Image 1: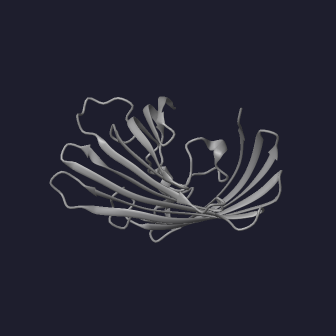
Image 2: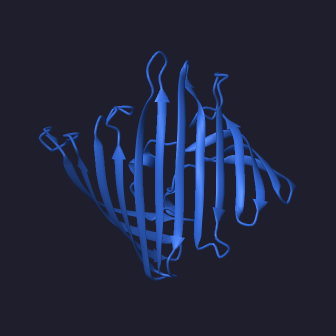
Image 3: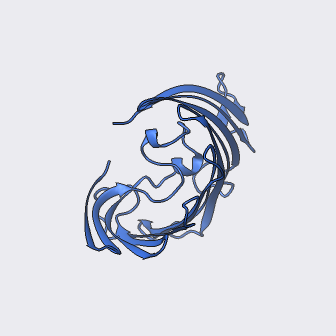
Length: 240
């Protein structure tokens, strides 16, 4: 999933070349690093990784800037000469209790078709047992010969950890594709409640998820449409 080489030119400037996980979004490519097992709609539609060259620049204090050039989103190799520009500005409070990340990507995803995405992630530690995360993103696509249109989403993550071995995360997400950029042609609200039971590096995750759309985009067992659906899953992740 990742293979890259980094070189620290100085303590304030580092170059990285290869393939690495995306900087866009609150959720991460590795399942064990997320508290919810199922993905948000925003993360489901990517990006997931980039292949190219990037520079990390320290701006002093808690602020930093990343800029880079990469293949089109999620392509390890490509015959296309088109490249994406990627960037991230990050900052935070001196005690690291509040962190913010403004993310960006822009490039041609097909001949004559352009994609631009802005993404914001903010995390805050209210206490040592309660934290909040926020992710908002908007992606605009302009197909060849067509007009531009956007999809967007917004999600909040409430994390509670009564003990080091047990935690709860409630994710509430609103996802809007009413302009049919992704083929959904509707808006969806999804609420996901996940418990995390930790045994050393093993995490057991029972999860309940409820999705409700403005239109009948989900299918029932008899293949008729419905606006809402519920899911329960039991997952386990292990890191080493």
